[in-house]
Image (cartoon, rainbow, N blue to C red; front, side, top):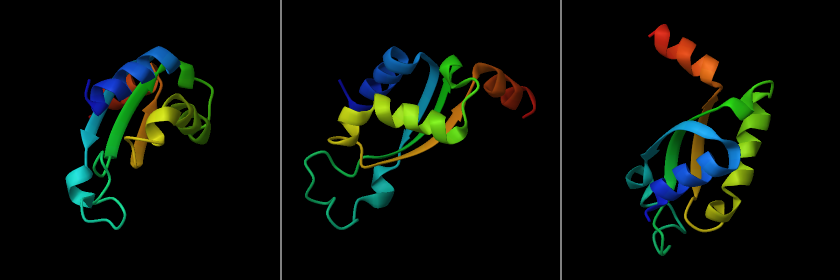
Length: 98
């Protein structure tokens, strides 16, 4: 299973994510010192995550939930993860207004 699929499955299982979009940005960071010899590559990702479990939580709490859910991958396959987190209501409103 590839890293993106693993991330999506983990977030669905551990925080009930109903929508996860991940963009692999590793190519933009492939020359960072210390990452060129990594067996997993650069592991830089941008993620949009929608979960009902984010309701009533601050953005920092939401991001901590994601990092806790991905703790194993953060030690191996993920070097950097840029997050945008939303409740389903926020996501719907955002997509209705655009």
